[in-house]
Image (cartoon, rainbow, N blue to C red; front, side):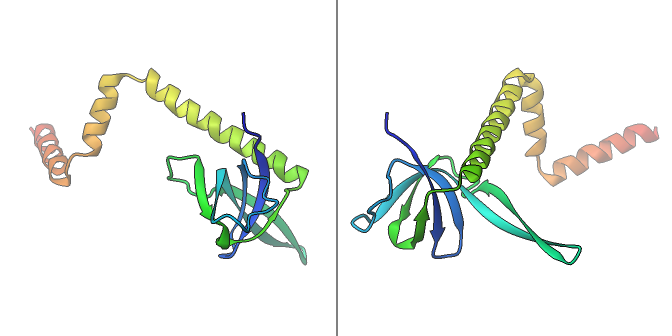
Length: 145
């Protein structure tokens, strides 16, 4: 099994990303691409409170709607690569664990749900607006009689 390194990337577009990679990133000048796994963007949030500024950080998936966990990025888009602080690694690990648990819960709920009810829910979700209005009109006529 390949060793994965946790790295913090500063990209030239200003984004800060923490991720895993099988590359130790000691010499990426010879490479045009680097593969990263489970990338998470880190946003800094500054909160004024009592005459002071507090800074906190928020993590979210870098490419939230992507199906792949491995992303190839151009090395010329990287400004700096550092080993993350131990506290950041712990937060990243907790974030990834909670995302995995949420994903598993959604799959379990879908597997345990009534397939007929799920089909009906999906069918209703994709019906046209006119079909919904027609059904509403029919319901109103029934209640008026």
